[in-house]
Image (tube, rainbow, N blue to C red; front, side, top):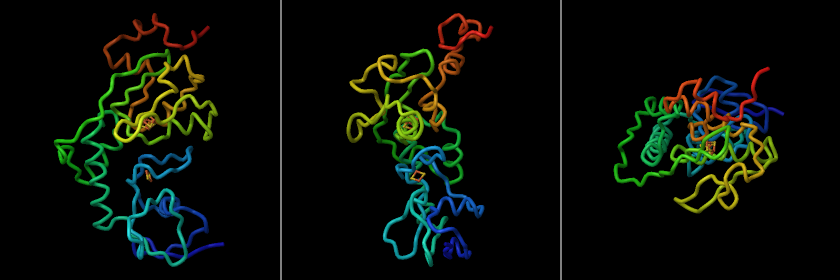
Length: 228
Ligand code: SF4
Ligand code: FES
């Protein structure tokens, strides 16, 4: 079954059941995303993809809201732009975005000021370097949940990590804060692959950034199998 609705004043015909984001992408309409990833279940956590839907009191996250017959959607109204800009400014004021080039690009596009909330408390934490494959730097984590999902039902079924703590203290962590080798983690690397901010990073890349040479790294046990 197909539905007809309007997006930015343009009439669109779409398959029933698709999300606004899916339809937008099929029709060349750009809606930014951060927590959304094609390989993971959308949970609408970051809200950067919000759009204005006529008749709805609040902005709607395009990554989970389905397109419906006769809907009237604005993807770049003033309200939408202001909301996205504020989300970016709040992120920049509380976390380290230095390894998130896509978000940095969004900040320029939406005119977001990184110093808009100068008194905001920043989420700081020590780099966790406890396994041969990857490091975890949760100062760069925006809690998008992608890593948790690929570690669980969306891909690996390993369940090594999850949310821990509450409110501002919420972080991604292991059960009882155990080190990665003490968990069920199989070092598959899928969490690293889906992390949008560099909070999870291959250890080799991290060591190169720290100034170590490839030769120095090769003599460490970084978990890479030697080529025969
Ligand atoms: S570590 Fe990366 S993938 Fe995991 S929640 Fe944080 S930002 Fe998202
Ligand atoms: S991309 Fe839709 S809420 Fe994050």
